[in-house]
Length: 310
Image (cartoon, rainbow, N blue to C red; front, side, top):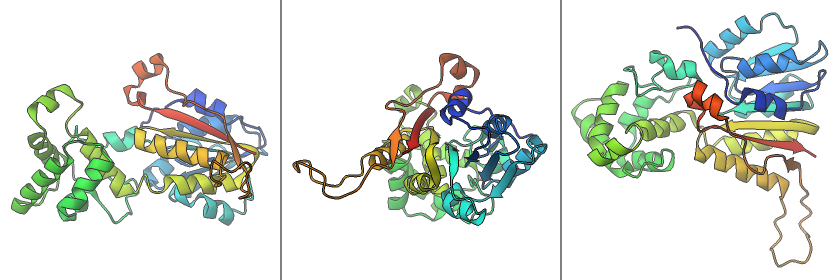
């Protein structure tokens, strides 16, 4: 399958990085290399772009698209390891880091990857195809309590308990192995009125399972903190999120880094000695324009937040 991906908030995120021609930049989530392509165009021979992705298909595409550039280093890894990646490359500090936390269009549209509830395919959902945990394992091996928790917390599905119960009943009859088998079970679990009025009935549950398989939420805060440690003074971190759970973690982590004081509010002055590490550039997140949403409906929920290292 051809690797296609439309980069979301492309101009806004490139502008957010304040790119220096001789600077060092990290694209933590290469995807289709759309953002990386725009970053490296702005670099001189003295500049450097480091592209990270855990999906070998994305790295292969980046090699094709960006193969003419010598000031490029591609790394197959999870971006949560950004600190150790930069240490191994003997890079003490960088001038900008970009994270696009969305699933690439290629991953969504490729039936083999099992991300989409719109295509019939094996239940997989691994961003890293070498990973051990799959959607099939989650659906068939997790307890009813565990399924209820992740569907409720990660999918914000108000019928989580009912969906989990229907999954358990069906898998007791036959192992659930495909996306459409799971979709049919979810449709049966969601009341008819909710199916008619809301989004696709499987959307929230599929999101929840994908987040669980890839540990998407639990790595965000620590990765932001590690990224800030590697930013040079004046360096920027720009993060694109696609749902409220991600955005909330990013917003709260930015806030904590900007105001790390742990003193009680009634104290007349700070005695903990913790000083701000960053300045938050975006008090409100940057969202796609109407034109972008028309051209790429998947960008609708995207939000961009930016901080600068002090």
